[in-house]
Picture 1 (cartoon, rainbow, N blue to C red):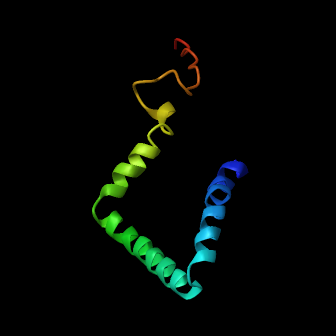
Picture 2 (picture 1 turned 180 degrees about the vertical axis):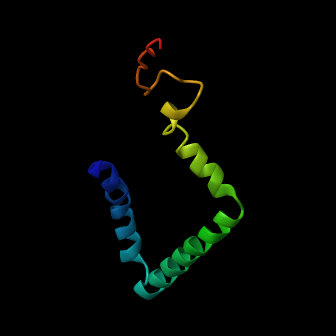
Picture 3 (picture 1 turned 45 degrees about the vertical axis):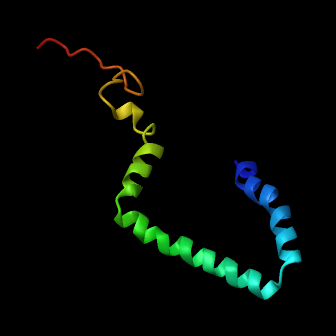
Length: 85
């Protein structure tokens, strides 16, 4: 799991280093800060459009599998028969 989390840094780190060395440091920081601002500002807009519900539903759709009615035997306990009284 840690390797998966480190994979973007390992793949993009050398490329980002090349860009950081070739361009002016001040302009690189300004552009990166502007891109970061746009990404963070888009989070509330994304949530307000309702697209986040579709994304969460898509990504978390398989986590509620044992609770769904179309798969009653997955993750459910066997029921004991009731005693006749």
